[in-house]
Length: 203
Image 1: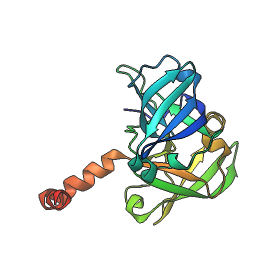
Image 2 (image 1 turned 135 degrees about the vertical axis):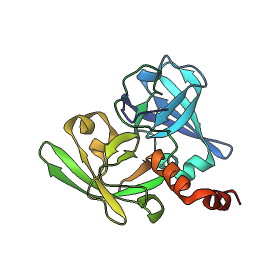
Image 3 (image 1 turned 180 degrees about the vertical axis):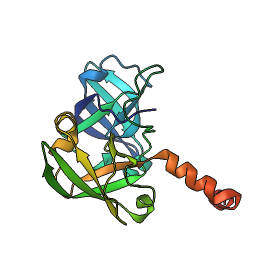
Image 4 (image 1 turned 180 degrees about the horizontal axis):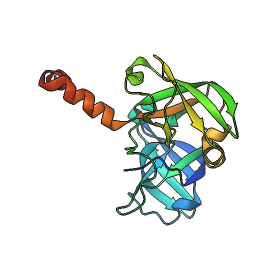
C-alpha cells in the first residue's frame, strides 16, 4: 500500500521490449537498497523490481498496465515519481493508494494561484463518478484533493513543494496523467448496489 507522498523523482534510462511487456530501466538512487521482488510505485503505478544494477532499477510493464496507464508512452529521459510502499508504524501523510491506476486523465489548463498553481484535469465519465468535492484523488502517484468538480473534470491545487519534488511541476496542458480514484468510493458503490450489482459484475 502507498499513501501518495512522493519520496523522489527518477529518470527513465532505457525502454526495451520483453515479449508483450516493456522493461523499464530507471535511474533511482532512492531504490539502490531495494530487494528483487519489492513493490515500487512509478507515477502511481505499482510495479515489481525485477533487476538491480547499482542505482539503476528495472521493472516489467505488462500489456494491461500499458493500456491503463501512461507508462507505455514514456521515453528515455522522462522523469518519474517514485514512492516506496508504506511500512507499518510510519506516518500516514496522504490517503490510501493501491498503485492500481484506474485510467488516464488529461491536463486541460494550468493557472497560477499565490505561490502555487491550479490544475484542471479532464477524465472519462467512468472515472468522474468517483470524484467528489474535497475528496482524495491520486494524480501520477501524488495524493491530492479534488476541487471544483464538474461532470467531466476536476481541479487540484499544487503547492510549491509539490511543484518542486514531483513531475507535476513540469507538466503542461495536454499532458496525460495517471488517475487512481479513492478506493473507498468504489467499495461504497458496490455495497450500495447490493447483491444484484455484485452478481452482474461476476457474470
